[in-house]
Length: 197
Image (cartoon, rainbow, N blue to C red; front, side):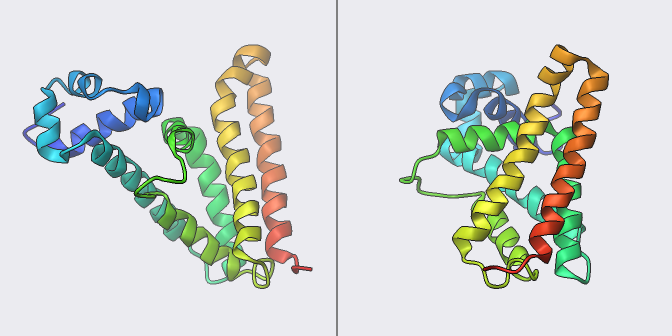
């Protein structure tokens, strides 16, 4: 890492990789410092605690995901949500580390957590879904359940793709990705066009 440019950004990138691979509890401060080629004190100088470093990694991820929502913007909220999930699928497949980081964060979390860095991302998606015909009369719990279903399916696809490729071959993995794209696109179109009962 070229620490003379922006050591903080470099440390966040390294921590993101380590937390995605090992989770919060599996990546010690010594491991993180070793991967960065610095002392634990150097990391603590920037982040004060491992918990703060982890929160910043997740906040940076949430900001990237919120930026993806903005980048998919369309005048019609239904088209915006459809475009976002198409981008999210592509992004998840090209950046599986982000998917692993989210999954690790979910596994490491409990309801007593002091911060929820991913909440702004989910809040943005809930607000967008609520502006579609399918989300207008739905409760937050209903929308969140639907979002969890779609996000989870995309994340599972991204995480399982290497294993599917290994078990069934690259052609099969590509075909699974293609079929999943069709299934997920249809699920999003169905939701945005539906009326809550």
